[in-house]
Length: 472
Ligand code: NAP
Image (tube, rainbow, N blue to C red):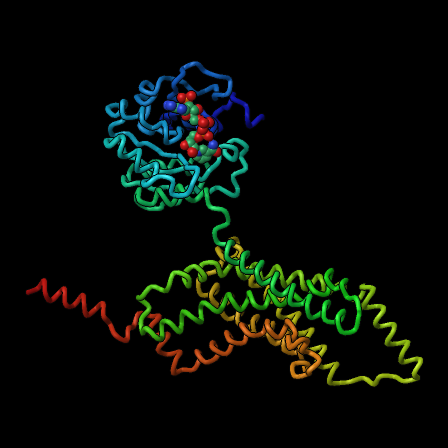
C-alpha cells in the first residue's frame, strides 16, 4: 500500500463509528499528514479550509468544508495553521466556544514571541480550551511512518479533561503522550524542536578546545623540538603518534570532568550545610551534560584502542624494532629480560584493558533502552561506583605508563612536561578530593544533608515564624 496515497483507508474500520470526529483547520502539509494518520486510526476527519474544493492530496475519506461548517461538526479542532494567520479565528469565537483547540504550531526562532503560540490562541479565543500537542512530530514522519525517533508527543493545557482527550487521541495514533502540565509549559515545548543538540554543545566545544591545545602542545614537543635540536623530521607523527597521544588524554580528562561537578557539589553542600540552596547555574548546566561528556570521553578511548592496535604494523615501529635487533647482533650483545619493565608494561596494558572494558559498560548503561530497565539504585551503582573504578583504572594506566619517566629530565623539552602528565592533573584532583570526602567526618554530615538535614535551618525557622505569626 502506498503510504502517501490520498486514498487512505481506516485501519480499524470496526471502530471508526466509535471514534469522535476530529476537525483539522488547514489543509497544508501537517494538516494533511495528521488527517491521514487519524483516518488510518479510525477517526472521521473533517477539514476546515479557505477553499472547500477537494484536492487529490486530501485523504479520500475526509470532508473539506468552510472553517465555520467544519468546526460545528467536531468538539476537537486541530489548528494546523501558522500563528501569524490565527487572527481569523476571533470571528469564529462563538462557534469555537467550549471546544478543544489543539495548537500544533512551531516558530522559526527560540522565544520568537513574548507568549507561546498556544497562549496567544487562548487569548484570541478565550471561550475555548486550548491544548498544545503534536508540534514535535514532523509531517514527513507522520506520513512515512518513520516515527521511531519522535514517538513522544509533549502535551500541555489548563483544562484537565481537554488535555486527557487529546492524550487519548495521541495514544490511538500509536504515539506516546507526555503530560507537561499547564499551558505555561507551551513556550518550552515550542522551543524544543528548534534546539540543536543542546546538551552536546559544551562537551563538543570543550573537546575541540582541548584537542587543539594538546595537538599543538604535542607538535611542539614531538615534531618541532627534534627538528630544531637533532634536525630529525618526525612530521609523520601527525598521522598516528600524536592522535594516539591526544585521544587517551582527552578520554581521561573528560571522564574526570564527569565526576568533578559531583565532587564540587558535595563541597558546596558541606559548606552551606544544606541541600536546599540552588547550585550556581554553571554547575547545574555542567551536571546536566555529564552523560554527553562521558560519551565523548568513550569515543576518544575507543579511538585510542584502534590507534594502539595498529602500532605493530606501522613502518616506523617495525623499522625501530629491526634496528634495535640488528644493533644487538652487530654488537654481539643481548639485552637481558628486565622483570621490572615486563611488570610495568603488562600492568599498564592490563589496567588499560580493564579500564576500557568498564568504560564501555558505563556507555552501555547510559543508553535509554538499558537505563530504563534498571532501578535508580542499580543505575547509581554503575554510574557512580563503577564510574569511579573506571577513573581509578584509567588514571593508574596513565601513571604506570609514565613509570619512572616522570622525574627524568629528558621528559621535559623546552621545560614542557609530557602531555600525558598534564592529563593526570584533573583526575588526580577528583580522586584525592573524593577520597577525602569518604572520610566519616565528612561523609556522615554530607549523607545527612542529602537526606534533608540542615545545619542552620533558616527556612523552617522562617516558616515557624510565619506559622506562629498567623496563629497570633
Ligand atoms: P503549510 O503547509 O504552509 O500549511 C498551512 C495551512 O494554513 C495552509 O495550507 C492553509 O490551509 C492555512 N492557511 C494559510 N494561510 C492562511 C490564512 N491567512 N488564513 C487561514 N488559513 C491559512 O504549513 P504546515 O507545514 O502544514 O504547518 C502548519 C502548522 O503545523 C504550523 O503552525 C507548523 O508550525 C505546524 N507544524 C508543522 C510541522 C511540519 O512538519 N510541517 C510539524 C509540526 C508542526 P487552507 O489552504 O486549507 O486554508
